[in-house]
Length: 551
Image (cartoon, rainbow, N blue to C red; front, side):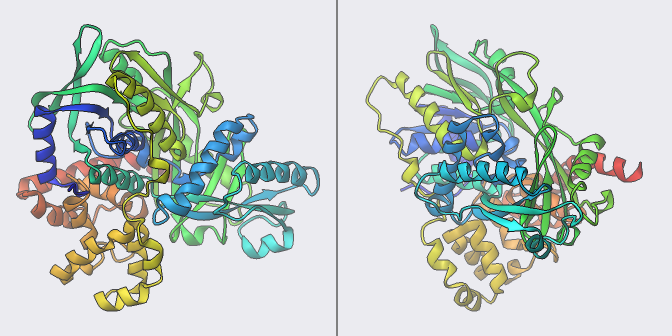
């Protein structure tokens, strides 16, 4: 009855519905919390709409550390509830909800002292394992000797590392995961539209009855009616509360997290590495044939839409990683840099962001209006459930309980069976087994959508960039099935070419514009404008790196 496809035709139908119908729940914001709330609400049988001013996962949800984890460092803050909750969500994602997207990853916690440190860290990791309960999708931690570490991770300095403890968490392409949640919500009937900015709220007395919205493509203004509105605006929460004339029970502090990307041969290790720093932790995370290294955790008060890495941010990451690496990472090794903002619930003015709560807050500053902030990417489903639980009070009728704990994302169904058929799929479609594995780990059982495009045009089986696994079919699919409307959407979020390619995707931008331009009905002028807009974004992203290399 419903389709999960997000594309220009679907968007136009959504705009018509938004302007003419009344919804039970309207969601503002297309990050992971917003799409999570849309899925939670629509799967309860409610009539749901979601609007996003830019693109799905355009903010924090595409700029995280790409980890699904319990937050090992929160044990030191005695935040056992948050860790237990996050570990439960991690187990669900790896095993049933989205095993095609969320994968186990092993980490080494290097030790520099033989007895006290091993005892202390070992006790913490034992507690970390215990908090996840009895259903365990990932192995337990294991103590390793210095000799073993030399074989597993030759890049760790043998002169100071006496051993390590290996433990497991999971990783995800955050933007892809957010997209699949959005498509799952659409599959169950949610009306979804990007490029729709909320300008104001509509009210009947004190009750919020919907919003005044603007289609950013045409600047057309229209009203969306809803019995309850949920705002999932992340770091934009304070700004929008003020704009709407609302006084929430919390405020949001922004913390900037910067990551660098380096080639696979820059760090010789079979496992990821986690390091404790003076203010936080640093992760060295395997990412295909590359490494993501980060993150920083510093207060931020700049432009919410354009958080940029500074020379100091990048130097800090290099300095911290190089405490234990031999050979050391150099600025010249860095392929890409990205920065994101964490929305932290502030308890009092002036708190350091490393001390602020990672737990979420759900608030109802006006009848018919709920807002949410804080939390961790890993616990998005719990935050979404809590927000919808509060919002449905305004519906004044019995509403079904949340079912998302038992609801797999699209692509999960049949994934494990397809993993057993890689060779067969490769042979039948004249593509390599490595390509099939790449597609399964991005689309799961929705791989058929990509294969259908290739069957219609064999040239789409070619890579868009020779050294990266993304196919031209995936570039077209981003528009026909995943709601991409620009070169930036495709290279920054539908793929991760912007930080995986040595040139940030600059050389491929024109080809991408050509492929998606045909599906979007673009002429030469629109293609050129979209390429220029993407290049402008990448130029700003890499300023810190250029500054560091030239210093």
